[in-house]
Image (tube, rainbow over all chains, first blue to last red):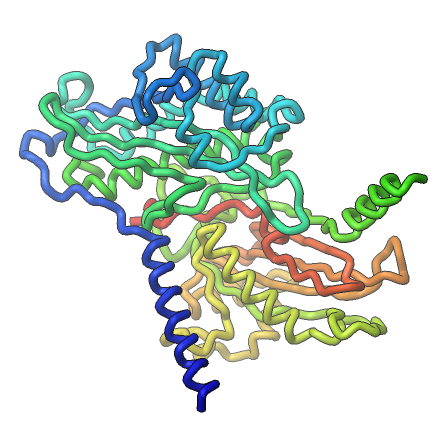
Length: 252
Length: 215
């Protein structure tokens, strides 16, 4: 009798734990259903690279808005950070800006990628991710008056993007493309919505797909053609997530 | 050779033995789904467009391999087949974002196997040589965009006749045309244990169209 009771208890506890684990693993996405009437128009879409100068003792979480020239440098150093990994972060820090949160959130990066495979690093640095974001979001929005005249701004702050190792038994050199974006909807007066979305690591959400993972060599082939394709796919995915989470905007 | 040198040598040899070998091929032709409307930005893309997949039972080619190990694939054929198909569904769903279903799943509501005229093994055999009509019939029965064929081959390793190896193969066929959109294979030595590493087999298949992009 006792083994049976113990078995049932174990089963109950296990199922409760599994249920709690499942609940914790997939939090519901926050959706903006209420907004002032003046905010329900086609927004001006902007995207930029946000950098946290973790190595320069800037308080964690503070965003530094960069000039056009600095954005170029940030793209290089972020890509370098992602590719170089922990050892590379120190070198990347000397390039002025480092995105510290991504480094923490995405775990341990492979330390040898950039040195072993220059093509990947070059492809990462050569990708204009902010432009991809703007293009994808604008393609999903209804046509209409837009630009600086819009009272609403939909901003994609790209906290970081890069590669992380993927551990598959018996295979080497597998990586996943990761990207972390703060999605912000605001008017001149107030911020209506802000959420951080990570594709590739961190907290999963119901509308965030698993990351694209493949071999490093395949990703780097043809001058990083596949890597650029994945980054464009990610931009499309973030735009689709924006359409789902911000139904107050005029999407197609 | 020093003790340290010997240890390094042993480690290298062990590494070579447990290291599998994976390869994959993808059609250059665009893949077209039949169960949903493809987002504009995905037009012209490959196997990832085939979001809903039906997975047919594993074909196991065992050969005549003597084995003295109870953990050998030769004496665990049913286990190999079940693990292969179960892990295939799991990996494609959780890591690659497809919506796979097992063709032999009795819990499938309506349609499915009940509407088929032949045993599932026969469908798998007919699809090996490419058969658009059969692909269309299966696709309609399971409301699928693609069909996954699985094959396990257990036999002697070419480079070492005294060793055995397990080869896992998968092909994804497009329901609309019946042609192959992706294929992959993975093999590993199988003398000491039976390495059904399905994640390695599908490591290079591209992700499916995300749910959030399907309206």
